[in-house]
Amino acid sequence: MEKSIYQQICDNITDGILDCDFILHEQDSDDSVKWAPGALDGVRIYHMSHTGMDAAQLKGMVRALKVAICGDFSKADAMFFEWTKDVRAINCIDELQNYIIDHSQTLEVRNIFHTALSLVLYSIHVECVKIGLELLELFGDPQESLKEIIRRIGLYDEFTIFAVWNMQQWENGNDEIFAIAKKVHGWGRIHAVEYLNPNTEEIRQWFLTEGTINEVINAYSALTCWQKSGAEGLLFGNPTSEEYASITMLIDGLMDEGPVPGISEIEDAESVMLRYLKLSSSYTLSTDEYDVILSIRHWADDRDVLSVSATCNQILHSKDCTEAVEAAVKEGKALRLANELEIPFRKDLLKCIRKDFDENFYNCRYLMNCRDYIEPTLQIFREKLPFSEMAGEPEDNIGIGEEYEAYDKLQFILQELAAYPLVGIDFMVAGLRSPITRNRTRALTNLKCWVQEKQLPLALLSPELFELVKDLRAQEVNDSAMALIIPLLNGQTLFTGDGDGSEDRS
Image (cartoon, rainbow, N blue to C red):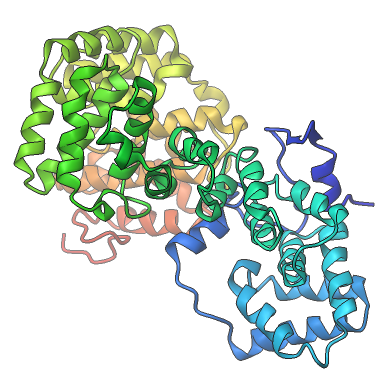
């Protein structure tokens, strides 16, 4: 008999901490894209609006609840599982809880509670466990035994936010949220940070030093931690070197507004940045701090904040910065700084990649943008990649995981070849013969760039690659890849927009 989700989690807890390499075994997951624990819910919370349920989905919820009310817990689990194939638990919490509250006079509340507990303890379906936690939230501050169940299941990032919502109802809820925030490191920490209040000096200090440290993107929590830690007040006081380093980390997250708002939400950001820069002379800066100052300069340049930009330039072109960067590049570090500040680094980087390929291969982009280093870089990759073992039948598989490391390294080179027609043909062949979808689509996209730049049909540009693409057409299983194949075989040489290039103007 398959273990329940709760039991799987409990089996991997040591001294109150979930094993860092534990990944839940999900029988009901058939997604080709494997999301990190909590990632899909996180994307929905931060990047999708809540649209509510349609009539059919609402009807399905009511049917499952009626079974739960009758006390048939096993059948309720099965019905909630079928329902959540179409509706994720994170999107239905308001409708689910409001329905029960609105009908509390006619529902058998005791059975609702036992259904919730059964789902949490015994279900093998992720979304059903979440439904159980959402239902438990309606019952307020529970007994200690149930609290311990919620604490344990909340250690897995997929369920942390649902555990946090329960903890908010508890007498010492903020302390509980703080305890779990320190034990999770992915999406669970991002969510816990949002609901944690800085009601003690210890928590405020944690917001400053650790709150943004997660395995996703620090930017998600940067603004929240900036506000809850009182970082701005510290900055305009006399921060210690440790506090300055933590403030630097927060500013780094604020500058990255790709996922969520950051620096744009800071009132009078110009004066805040000038204060930070002014203080820099009081500390010994590492390349990490200089890199953040470079990000500040980008922000200032984009917004014509001349005072900040000028101050950044003064620091970045100082002797101290130059010497720090020159030392770092010998170890394959501070490459963005070296590249933008025009400090020579490629010779050292090439040595680093040759000496420790696995640790440095991803920095090949800094070499591939300089023609003198293209062939030496490709040669290192030729020596390190097991080309003879990488060919296979096309699969609809993006290839994420340790077993796909060689394909990941191939991808880093492929994405640099688009600008260089007919360079690295052997890597293009490997890409087209790869079983991994992203390698094939990257190679095909490169071919699209090549034929457009040279204004030659693929059959004339490279008969060898044309034949490979023709062979691939008969085997390709991915629609996006096939959409790239057809125009290439049809001789198209001009592509518009981001689509598949179906408009032929050749």
